[in-house]
Image (tube, rainbow, N blue to C red; front, side):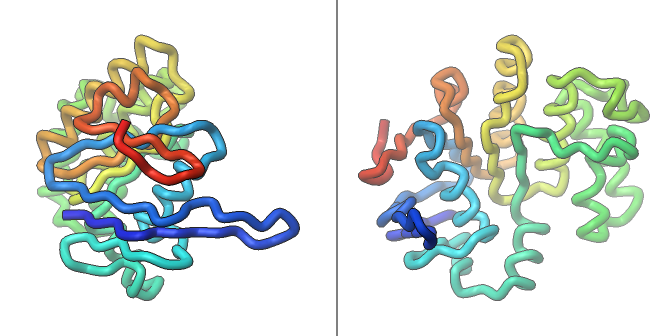
Length: 221
């Protein structure tokens, strides 16, 4: 489903350096992989390149036959909106919207019919065990609950590809284990593929495969 080939990226400036060089891997539908590495090694940069949020210097990212590196900005935005979901370390839950409204955002952007959207939001809230918190505001939630909202929001529109960038970095160990379990469970249940970027061995252990990113490239752990 996803093929990354010889992806390279450098940043220019006074301390110009190659961040990523000749990165290649494949990801099948239903597969969940983790990419580990030290802080600053380029894990988030790699995720941004795969998602089309940043442009590579060279290489290819092919999702379901579409070469993302050849698409324009508008086409990439539409593809991300329809086929990708994102879970970040900082939650990015909108404080003035209820839990249900936060989860429904991708459906609104994709102009899903109201009745179908309502049913889908309810299903995802059940999946992340927040079925009784739909009308709550984010300020009424714990950190673990807010991250579960973020997981539901990332998956509500049934994306083909889900990215999680240090999703448990702000959570206590118990909440982290719960969120990691739910993330894997929900990705698998939806038939999506998942890429988890982390420095945590506990988080990486939930993946089907683990890669290690170093200055020398990406290798199976």
